[in-house]
Image 1 (spheres, one colour):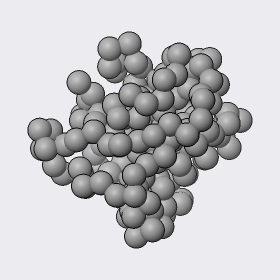
Image 2 (image 1 turned 135 degrees about the horizontal axis):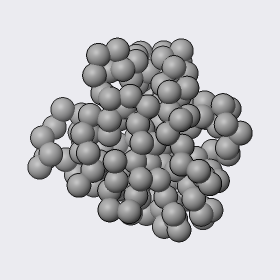
Image 3 (image 1 turned 60 degrees about the vertical axis):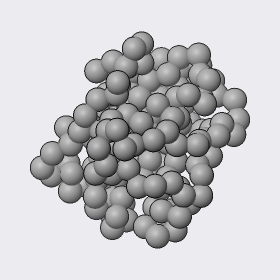
Length: 158
């Protein structure tokens, strides 16, 4: 799957057991589910990747749910591959929930870049639906080459 020139890979299609795994990680803090997802994501890494950059969850949701699922997936991928994790994005304290919202009701997220990123980074997230979260992150990363790797894909980036 490609967004313009940005390669996108997913560990699973967002259906059946994969949905349950994501929800268990995201809303029930099941780290075992996250490890299964991360293991499936390894084969989606593009050749030449130098670092993993998670798309962070809002602070409010991290507190409520006890996990930043993209960061957990990135750390697990780093453990499995030896790639470093760079926390290059800062998330707003809160944003209106986008899960389940229609495409036209989704909005850009006000991520900020916190540091420079090397070339050939991969942006990590849990689910790709419309791509709005990933587009928001890509817009501020300013990486020379970037790819996207998600645990599950329910849709596509436009």
